[in-house]
Amino acid sequence: MSFTPASAFIPFSPPQIGPEEEHELLEALRSGWITTGPRVRAFEAATAAVAGATHGVATFSCTDAMLVALAAFGVGPGDEVITTPYTFISTAQVILHRGARPVFVDVDPRTFNIDPARIEAAITPRTRGIMPVHFAGQVCDMDAILAIARRHGLFVIEDAAHAFGATHNGHPVGTLGDVACFSFYATKNITTAEGGMAVTSDADLAQRMRVLSMYGISDAREIWQKRYTRAGNIHYDVQELGYKCNMTDLCAALGLVQLRRMDAIAAARRSYAAIYDEAFADLPVTTPHVAPYAGHAWHLYPLLLDLDRISLSRDEVVLRLKECNVGTSVMFTPLHLFSYFQREMGFNEGDFPVAEDLFSRVVCLPMSPALGEERIRKVAETVVHVVTEGAR
Image (tube, rainbow, N blue to C red; front, side, top):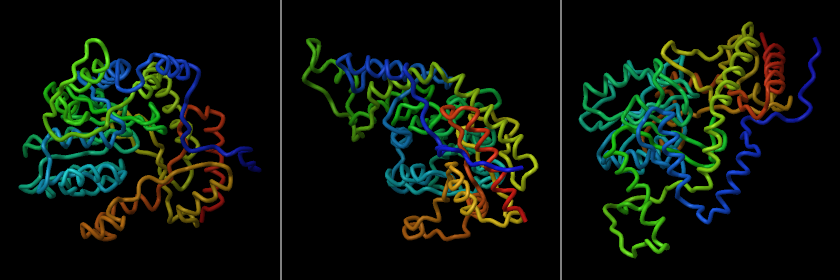
């Protein structure tokens, strides 16, 4: 059967932005209040409700959300926080920026997520908490992780950058650990262009994160909104050393519209995953394993190549897909392979073999609802063509 490449390039993850977002953004611009204000508060409340939490603290990125969460727990020099090397650099960077040390634990080869069976061996007297990463939108084995955390008196901050809308045994991410941190970056399932949020049901923890996200100023959001009005006060107090990482009302305006379309977005991603699963059933590849406890958010579709049965390397497959007008990504380079971590922390290739093996074989395929089913089917057809041609 002859194959014809896509007539135009299919991008990996374009945002789905339409007239509703344009209208809400224009309304925010015309409101006279474009930084942190009423739309941010509304977005915090709506996001927390979706996540099953009682409090949301909006930030300018998921990185910021994780940073203020660590700061709220008082993480600092001499402390250790357990996480995975199979993640984006920000997960480890926020630990390092607090003066603490990230301790990596290898991953489960089926889920790409931190392997709970390896966690307790990494705990020391310096360990303060665990930061599991819900890779691709699949929730970690939180029952096992939370049991370990309880036994050792550790906090759990979930890096849920990929997992907004995901569930664990029917419970939404946001009700599991002490804090869950979401990303609303341009490529995420729900976008605010740039943005993140920490959600929790601990009122004191939420208030501490709010203070830390606005310079350490007490009641900063109320003070700033009223400062230049008739009700304003020229005086305020700085309680502690904080950060500047608040979300703007312009970003929140986008998020509020995206939340209204969340069910449709999630349904589209599920249907695209099903299309891929069916198309690749007979190929020398492994389609994503979904754990029985996981309600997958399908932020990514990580396809694993069986390199023993394909004559091409992973990078060659990526290049051939690009030549056929299909954009892909490879996520993630295990952190211990970066020169910084090898130079500063003494890591070497081979330290986390499962993570390294997954990275050498993974190709992440387009999943954005902005693409539509026709282009997703074209992606599937192209993958079948490239992999079949490369089969041994």
